[in-house]
Image: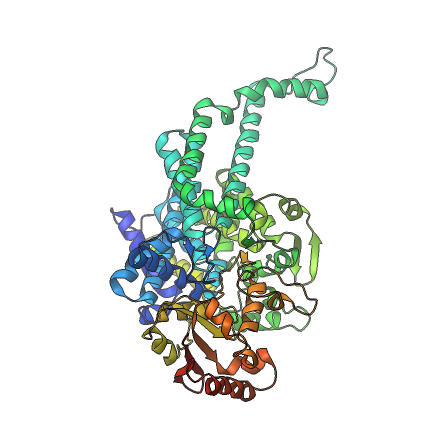
Amino acid sequence: MRFFSKSENVSVIFFYIITFVLVTFPLVLYFPSKMPGNSGDEYLMSWFFWEFEHYVFVLHKWPFFTNLAYYPHGVPLYVSTSMPVNSLIASAAYYFSKNLILAYNLIFFASFILNAYFAYLLADETVKNKTASFFAGTIFAGSPILIEQARWGDINIWSAYGLPLYILFFNRLYKNPNLKNALFAASGLFLATYAGFYEFTVMLALYSIFFILYQFFKEDKLLRLGKNEPALNENNKKPAELDLRAVIKNFKNRFPENPVFNAKYLKNLAVMLFSFIAIASPLLGPAIYYAYIDKRILFFNPDMFSIKAYSATLFAFFFPPFFNHFLLPFTTAVYFNPVYPFMVRGANSLDFLGYVPLVFFAIAVIKGFKNVSFYFYAFLFFVLMSLSPLIHIVNNIRVFDPFVYLIDILPVFKGIEESGRYMIMGYLFFSVVCAYGIKIFFERNLFKGRAVKFLLIVLIFFGIIIGYSSYPFQMGSVKVSKGIYILKNSEPYGAVLTIPFLQDGFKMYEQTIYQKPMLAGFIIRYGFHNLYKKYLPKEFFIFNGKYYKGNNLNQRAVIKLGNPRRLAENFKYFKKLNVRYLLIVKSQLGQIYGKTDSLNLKKINGFLKDERGKAVAIYDSKRTMVIKLKY
């Protein structure tokens, strides 16, 4: 069965471009003007691209420590979601186009194509069939869990192409231990970490352990059978395998003979690991320093609540995600059942395997298990990981699983708060098994004629797409206030204090427009603490006996600093922090400072009147006010 032309790679990429258009439609119609996402993290992720461009091309400085956020102290970006590889490419696109949204969407597009293409290459390694392997790429790149990460704006998780690339060459390294495979595996690990996120590094570390153990026991079994074990013991009365001492002795004898301990293989494994460390050292070294050695700035402590809230559910494997408008009518009663409304389980519970892929998965397991057994077991392993720590059947029906509690005591590994993301790896192995099932399906010769086979291929393709569909793909729609553009063109240069400051990605995106430093910020995963204690007195960090930590501590301190009833009193701190602009969000004043928006606004207008020589409103609308401060 050959569906592609002789130049298969070009054909495959072309069809993945078509797949991208279908999966993300109507994004292609708004490519230069709207980012995919539900107004969540996409704005923050685009900020990383802008920050990189601003530091490299404008300030000519190292971009992984910034004082554009959390001014004037500044914070490291080594252990955040900064995506150095994506940032480098996107910043170049932004530099030439001056369109941050376009730069973001180019990374979004390229990541999908690479996700699909590298999964295709991995599948073809086992399946040996180009057309069937094409569907592996479609299943992985279009999987609901990746789509949901994109809908939340997590382009770092969407950029998962380092996973199949690493696995492809790591697997090859065992079969053919040489420098080429070692370096390509190291490149895959680097891309997984620095185009994606260190969560992927943990996943690949676990995969590597799983792979080596699997190969060890597989080879040990072959060695044992090759030596005609079980043999008889000295008395010829019972099998030696029932004699514990004989079993241990035989195992020790086979141990050095196992190919896993081949000197050439171990040497190239070391080359792979040290190559990754060498390439990553400018980023990896400071990350280790800030995370584990100097903890004065960073605060990080994942809690079990987050892990529970974002684990997978068994039920979700067999029911389409709620964003699937094609299949939702058939599952509405399940999703909106008042007893088990499992659609509220969170972004990482959207693990629908798809009815069409499940058919071919079953065919592969039943008819060709010997050829896909490794990928089948790898799939089960990562399904188990995604269900940790309490295996969720649906909502509050759980089975205890202590595995993640073990991981919680390990450094780095415990950084995966959202265990459901392990299912990204699960989908990769699922896609390979499905591809083998498709190969078997067509090789049965049940369908005669090229036209019939082509029609079946089209039906399978659209069956997968419809099952995973998020049409219409959600795109950000928040509008930027004209005051932000006024702020951009204002002089002098100085810090901006948003009142009230609530942590969200859109405030970071606004900074990409006004291009001045800001107090506080929203850089997720690692919290920043103690940044303002040398600038503000103790009273700013007392919160009625409540315990605040990390980013939340800075947010509450900055909220107090911008209290409309204390602006005149806090003026001296504005000067100390070089705050030149106050950006007032009128609709949030009552929500944060109590009373009504209008009463708080009255206090701000009183401040302007009393400090006529020191503060002046340079923009005022129903939504926003911008105040310039003079010292």
